[in-house]
Image (cartoon, rainbow, N blue to C red; front, top):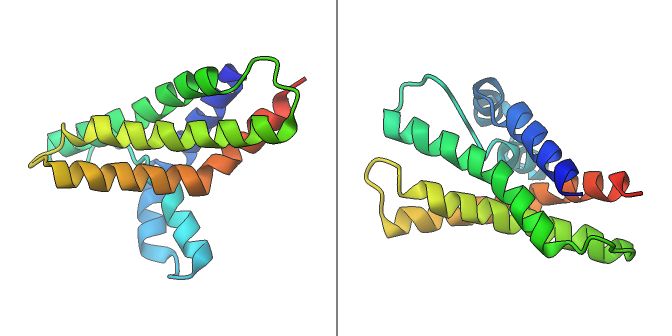
Length: 147
């Protein structure tokens, strides 16, 4: 299950955190519920070049990498290996992704230019919101892959 969670997190980060999708979501989505969800998919943004400072780019890249790594860590810790209860597997995987995203935001926030505790809280909140609205995708993938 951990490998599946890491692979699903990697695919989500690569597909929706890339600069092209992030820019599209920022500029071309509406302010309704669907637009909100599409913008949340871009939270683990990453880039190799940008107009932003090197520290901000590095912080965003670290955030995306930490999200993938911590998804594996939290899923392996929170999900029982022989979990036969479907609801328990689904919700513990979802919760693990919420914690992974919030933790990635917290750890990466202090790398940013003009880092502050308030800014770290914003990054943690962004990660929590991302995990809440996108974590069910990861939970479905892990649930579907069980034997």
